[in-house]
Image (cartoon, rainbow, N blue to C red; front, side, top):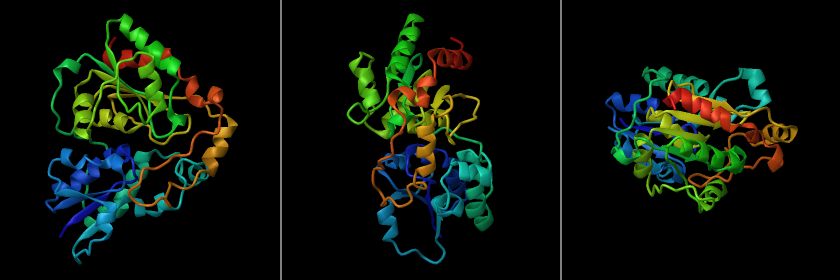
Length: 311
């Protein structure tokens, strides 16, 4: 018997939030492989203790499974496939569920009922890493993501950097300026970039830092997974809120009507996108000046940091 596990969706964060389920499969003693659907998830398999290996989804689909093998595909559940998660219709039908509520329901149906494997959905075990002592007093900024609608303002990041510098705290930007306009703008403004060429580098850096301030992106979920103090900046309409003790969530003020129309019209979970491709997310239809993320203030972020790391 072999288990093949596919996370709930295609991003790095989507894999990280489902790690407890993957770890439960590994702990069962059955050889377990991770099925990855996008390049964002590559490299993580080598960081997960006990995992037998990983396959890109096209490689997995070409396999002929034995009768005893099990494909645990969290994306196959009707709750995911047949709904636009976080939409008004979804909330009216199922309630205001977070991604973790959704993950728990799907996992109970696909893993617990079928395989009899039970685990603590809210328990996260940090992945092994190499400690970088030079970063233990540093704060990391993660400004960029796949969609600019998630991004905070350049002015907010620069002011936050200045305020922390005045307190004697050194900060670094994490990200890929060549792929992220938000990241490139901060580097061009003089904020120092800390390069992480591999997922292993990112894991070491994130796990060693004093704290992180991040928009909703994979590195934010990695920071929470590694139990680092994390200030998370979310859209007004978001289902990925985190509630761990090491995380402080700042949610933007209410979306303008353009955003609400966009959320209602967005295709359901990108289910029609071919396997193992970078996903091009839809951008926000609001103007730059009216995006909900513009309502997040530096004072909110400073206050949240103060509560987490006592600055």
